[in-house]
Image 1 (cartoon, rainbow, N blue to C red):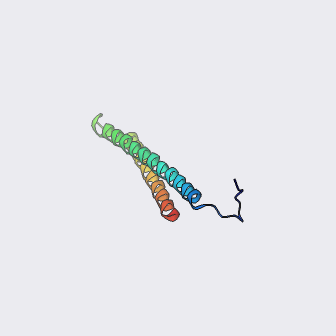
Image 2: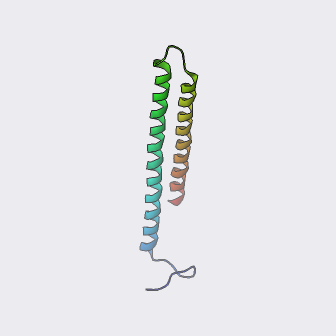
Image 3: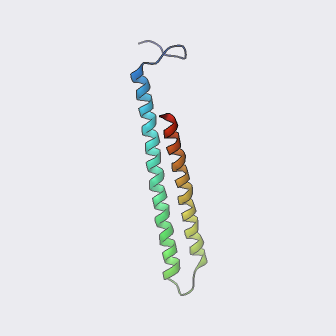
Length: 91
């Protein structure tokens, strides 16, 4: 098998395999981030519902906790956008 380096050309099938592998890794990254984002939203919803319904007076600690979870979800969404942009650049 020939040695490939900077001065040799990679076969087309090898380049396609590398790009496909990269696309799969990015796609899996997007899926994992999306799942984490959904988890953050659900936890934030639970915290906010708990703050609003379970006590006579509004518990601001639980409201701030819910806001923190929503903020984490927004950050995850931005990471998803970055991954999607990287997919566009690889095509």
